[in-house]
Length: 388
Image (cartoon, rainbow, N blue to C red; front, side):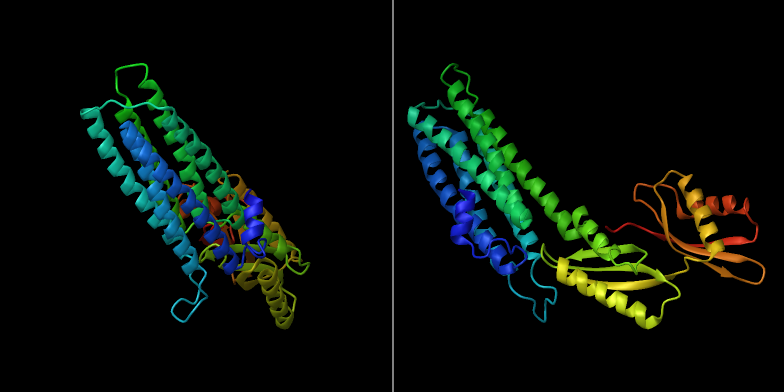
């Protein structure tokens, strides 16, 4: 069914980097979700009123909030697809994240309200009317929500959308919540103890958890987090495939929505190459990454002497020293500068975030070990962090 809907309503469905195609996916997800949730709200509200079940009515309003979320999602994708302008030169892609934040706020508000009404039901319990129609309506709801979860998860993976993934998770939790409501209805037929309010509390907690989880994930996106490892791997492989490039480091990627990424990196080039040749290597690499990966990249070049025996020797010594610390350090931009009475070893160290050793202690350890080889060698170290 999902593939049928994609082929039926989305033109060029595989061009997921195109903002118009993403908008079409967003419209499809929103439209299908809106229709399904409104129908479920009407059915559940009617059945909940008929049976006097607060948990069914709570579940109905959860579907109504999902309908509102579908409208917000539709508007969000429409706004996010707007092209870049003077005031927003990087485009409007991050509106997807704001859409997700609004959606999560709606979910949290509904969750709190349903928690309150369920608590009142526990204090003042009322008998629940059982009927086969109510039972069947809940089973149908579970099936529809299960399909919506799978549907949105497939769309979310296809276009790498945090909004659709969140919607899929919300639908999955709805399946669990409605199942809890169904259990409450069945149990009410075998005992005088009312668990309707308790199950309503369970439903509201699922709603609240979903809302807060989406808020957490969306805030991470807005603050900034590393891009997916597979994208980093593609960038590195593309750069290293050029035989003139020795290595890559200091890779930084910023995203402005899912489809807009801008980055920078340093590449190591033989020091005996001409400035004109080095410039051409950087230019062609930037073009390749733009054309193949749709990432705007700025590349800085670092000259590396790969033939000097002393440089090779002491680079190996420094590598052995930092390896002995067992902290996952790596070095780059290594070079030697001779002075009148000593030599400076100049290099960068990439320090993992989990390392708790101070930069000063790291440098002191390296200098102490280096003196065991030669008293005339000193270090000038720049400490880096991994951004990708």
